[in-house]
Image 1 (cartoon, rainbow, N blue to C red):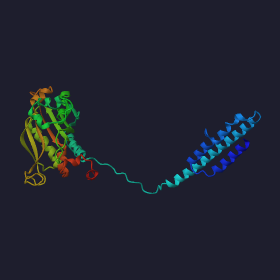
Image 2 (image 1 turned 90 degrees about the horizontal axis):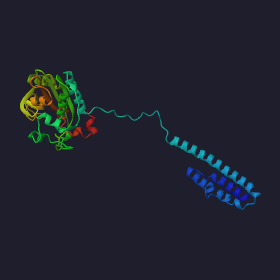
Image 3 (image 1 turned 60 degrees about the vertical axis):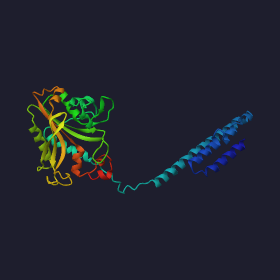
Image 4 (image 1 turned 180 degrees about the vertical axis):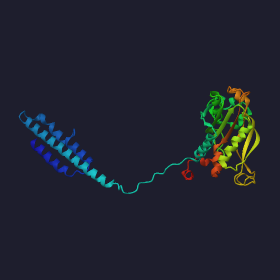
Length: 339
């Protein structure tokens, strides 16, 4: 048995010299020191030895085991060191080479125009107010003088979550919530996303953005509305901008009007941009209906007000001569890099 232990030791020494990978070293360890390894097999025969031989052979076997464990650890360190050197050679980085340039993002065209519009109205003393996009039917329709089953709802068909909860079709509910919480004087704009179940095409989207305005105070007249919108148009399109008011009907304003701006390309002569009309529609407006004021707890005999609403996409598309609304939502970087 002593001879067998010496043979195992010499054999292991020679075999260690041929190992090149950690996997081979692990196989070597299992071969000699594992539960079914060669050294273990020798130790299992210790019971057949005499009492005098047993401690001698046991000591020699332990020496061989410790020797192999030390050699395996030494070989493992050597292989790990070689592997590290190889990785350093293969993965070295030349720090003098210029790095890859990170592209810096820019504001979306809708955000650019919205920020500009907000600055115009802030300059006129308006506050910016926001509200929930998931809205109650009461705030989206009923409080705006549009009762259930009223025909005016047909033009604002939207996405219903329940019978009384829906995705808002306009930011007008923000005006109602503001008038409930705050008494006049009120001067706000309410920008935000709105939803309608429109089919997607070049000029329609089920999701779009509005900016609505509201002013309520004593003695507010249609002249204040026209003056405010005239100032807005001149700051947006230039001092030569001219507005035209056309009679219209909105359930929540009386009187109501559609507001057009004189075509800035042909100055009223008629061209492709304005489709030969000389004017371009930009928003709807009117005096707040007395019933809406009453619903919000504001006495229409004491206070009056005006409201207006414009589509952010429409303003943006005309600002940048964009002919398809889908470009604003597709996140194509080839399009967005222009801004």
